[in-house]
Amino acid sequence: MLLGKFVDYGTDNQVVNVEDITYSHARQYLLNCQEKGDKAGTMNNKLLRIRAFLNYMVECEVIKNNPAKKQ
Image 1 (tube, rainbow, N blue to C red):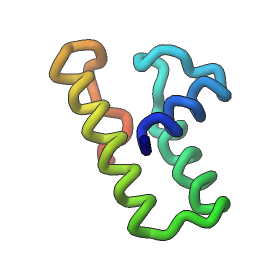
Image 2 (image 1 turned 90 degrees about the horizontal axis):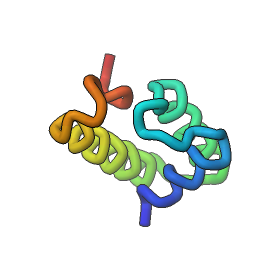
Image 3 (image 1 turned 135 degrees about the vertical axis):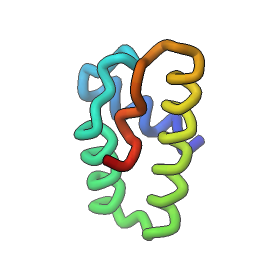
């Protein structure tokens, strides 16, 4: 599961609450994926899934803004 690896990354970096996710966390995760050899299409898919999850958290009023959204 693509989102599961993002959750694992967050846990490894002491981000245990969705409210604590920042733009930097998402960016650093994708940079790590790139360093591990992920292709552009795979990284775009991961970013889409992260954004969709965070959009859902906004809809559920868990967070106010999606930190992975384009600035």
